[in-house]
Length: 342
Image 1 (cartoon, rainbow, N blue to C red):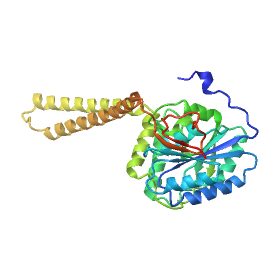
Image 2 (cartoon, one colour; image 1 turned 180 degrees about the horizontal axis):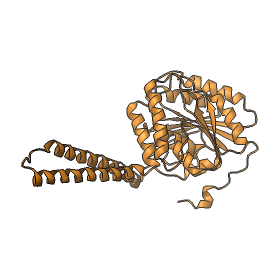
Image 3 (cartoon, helix red, strand yellow; image 1 turned 60 degrees about the horizontal axis):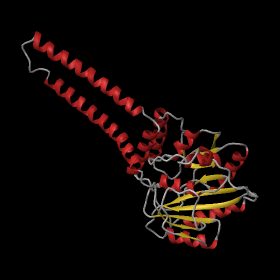
Image 4 (tube, rainbow, N blue to C red; image 1 turned 90 degrees about the vertical axis):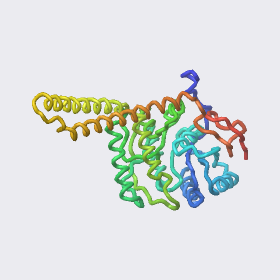
């Protein structure tokens, strides 16, 4: 492990500050051309910063990778990280953060629901001295009522359970200073919940309200199963309250069992009808059994995360870097198979 002094080693001085934009991509062939056009429009408004735009292909099965390669060939500001398979959105974001060399790093999805034009306002806040500028969604057009309701519920439940205050109604769309980025790079956990990790590191943070746009093309990459898993990662990665809740449920079940025992003894000692109470007994048994299974499941989730951590496998596997120098990024959590220069 690197010494603390080397983690925050100063980068060589540059004439102009560099802004890195990280864009995770998965099956984005319908939208990637428009995404690049909008990013180029944003870049034309930035005159006092150098730009690098890192697109992370998270194992796409369509033409996304080939389209991005062509973009990198004609515009040296664009770089590509190709995963060997699909590792998930949060891991793709992490790979982009690892590779980013900027004085500030912006995270934005490729679906254009988060408008690139808002980055200009984030830069203004960064220059005021804020280390993290996170976008807060004022509305969510184009999304179903079910998804809106479950997202609102998730953020509020997470806020109640989390040991770290996590802003409501925020995604990964944000700008982070170099100090925050270096701190994130020193955090090796596998079950990543980036927005929670950014809240955990501290520094000066501020919200930037914005109106989210409808998806330009394609469909959501977060079906219900992935949404549930993502919510589970967020809660279990930043709270031990589920374990405390299981203790409370255990005490409640023990109290119900005690009432059942008192009831059974009363029937035996003071009545001649012993069969009565069978229904109450079954309810008690089923209740206690259900509580035990729930508590075992909670423990299993935490133990499973410990198991994943101690295996020490790479967080992701990069098949190819495009647009980087011969050695690839300065920090990578993956063995690199190939690094293609321009």
